[in-house]
Image (cartoon, rainbow, N blue to C red; front, top):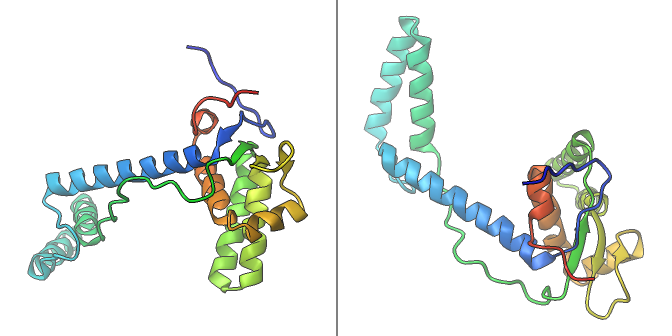
Length: 203
């Protein structure tokens, strides 16, 4: 097994957009499966089936433990309460290939963690401000910063994501999928991001 070293600024191999989206979807299904198994194994309810009386007893026990200075028991009660009260994620179901993406591929640019964090923070700030223009600018910054090139049917060779090409992606309705792919690849460790989407495309 060879060691894979990925440096900031390095561009990964081409991969089909639908394969990256499929990898993202399968990750969501695995998280759902683990959450469901944890809840079932620990007696946590599914959906909104919450036993309010049981939660009152838990809070009373936590208050008594807090009065006694037993912080470990308080922490355990808090974790158990979160498991009981948090909503169960929805099962993503089977992956459905989005229309008109079959011929689209991309290459991914690996960014330093601080740059990725700054891009995501700017997007979060824009979402919280509910400013449509700021949200669009932040999304375009994430996609253009992390996806190096895109290849699509009818386009001569890979195109870099700058200027008019970015607007063309938005006009074609591809931007939400590109944003999903960029965010997914950003969250992965560099080795997994390198492999996400399968083997390199033939040249």
